[in-house]
Image 1: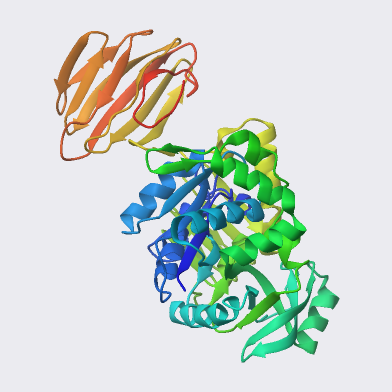
Image 2: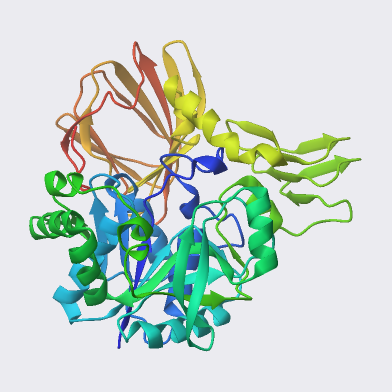
Length: 472
């Protein structure tokens, strides 16, 4: 029976700020190794015998990130489904199950978060094959991680009757325990961390939804039936999907069904990277217990995770810290308090600070822009446009722009005038003028943009034409 990976990648990753942000969350970052987490997830799924191209579930804001990262890893998705709002995992996977039944008849769905690390890919493939044999018998299988410590940050699964070697019926699910309870679970044995990965028949999952969470199935069906195609994306209908209850697969189905099973997932090298402390656990350490990445110098520092993305970071006489430097923000936190980083993000959001949403370099479907300098009534950006790409035909009410080409060739539309600019040439876009920037060449176009005016926010854009389906 065919296995269809379902990659869930619409999360925000608040606990890994300042690298993970609302507009560029952790699944799109290369936190471990050279590939991003979503790329690692897709490639890991491809290693499973009989795996089909994945169904990717994300949101409209992240659609081009997901598509570009899959393309650059040579992964072709069978569908990229856009949720209008987040409704947790049960509605998302319900849509994937309905799609699978439409496109290829019944199949096994391998539902996976896109932001986990699994170091042992071959072992993952072996365990998936074990789980598949049980799933073919209409069991809904989850992957239970054999606990290495009395961790209080995970939910637990208690195994029940053996179904075959290494696979058990689930006796019960347990919420995140306190220290004493987690220690007791470890001593007793038979308990696993709940990984949030699942394998089941599309039909079996929908049957259980129909019995235990019929509203989710109804709204998912309506949203898919009224969906629309947008280039490479499938947009779910907003009103129907928004009306769905917001529930995880665990709460909607797994804790209620009598056919829940768990495969004992050992030797995976699994980590959900739920915090900087979790990431530090799998990072290589030096003789002082420090994990350092980038241009880092230490003197008398110990047991710390120190990451420099843009500048040198020096740490002297400190211990048990997380220090993360980015172009526009620096985090310093005690290892025991990294779960609280999300509270900083919430405070940034309350103050409408952009640092919770975007990096200094912001990615767009046509390329990227990066803030270089800003002050009263001016702003300087570096803009990169991919070959063959173009920005929207647009105008601004409050700012004028000067463009200087530093590399490549620009085709500039300025009202009724069209011109080609090459290296060291420049042009001026007056306030209120309809204009467009295109790269007709074969190499990236790089230019410096100087904005001047009374308001320089990104929302001062009126779009008249756009290749990427973005409105004003």
